[in-house]
Image (cartoon, rainbow, N blue to C red; front, side, top):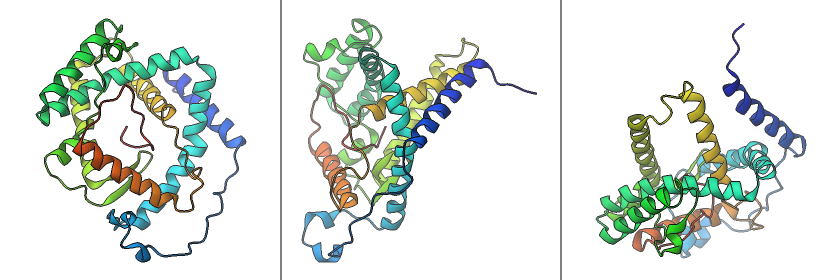
Amino acid sequence: MYRPPLAKRVPLVLLISLFLAGCASQTTHLPPEEPPRHTISEFQDERLAYVPDPWEHFNRSMYRFNYYFDRFLFIPVVKGYETVTPVFFQNRVSSFFGNLKEVRNLTNSILQLKGKESLTTLGRFVTNSTIGIGGLFDPATSFGLLRRDEDFGLTLGHWGVDSGPYLVMPILGPSTARDTGGFAADSAMRFGLYSYLDPFGSTGSPTAIAAGVTTLEAVDQRHQVPFRYYRSGYPFEYYMVRFFYHQKRELDIRKAPASGKGPALVPGLF
């Protein structure tokens, strides 16, 4: 009988163990939802109603799916990661993946013809890749080279593309039609660069290592986002998340702020 190599079995066994441990300590029901006292049509004059959401039924289904996925798989895995690894290791992992994302930030700064931001991002990447030992540390921030998050969704918005309808993506969370297209473009560019460089090609197990690195990156991304579904205490949480996501993206397009560290308010746009 075929048995997969040990390098492929260990991460799988770890994930299954963490998943089962999380399920054992959780209940299986959503918290009761507050019955609405008003309909959204009563708030046509309020800013909450400005976000186009023609796919609300589908989006709400995805919102619930993401809640279950988050609660029974993602968060237990993240808690296991936080339990077995020291904070120093967690910070180095976050810094490493943050440095890799500077490639995306640089590409989109150039596409938006932002000369100063492009030079700052290039300086951050070079500094952290060399003095920061491959991105494990972030000396660039102490040198005044602050991070400037960019992605292709912001690039499209910069050139006048409207956000389009609101969309809740499976696992990834809040998005819009424009940002989903931007995410696909960023992912395609990343895959093309990875295929060209093929960093694990000489290891003998490139697929297993790439899968492990991708899993670690996803866990680290969720580790940095404090948001938890249905923990806000607001009976209109769906509308609140939709509103804040939409407003934040519009503000990012009008003025991309520099920040030393910028975890997302809600999961989304890994």
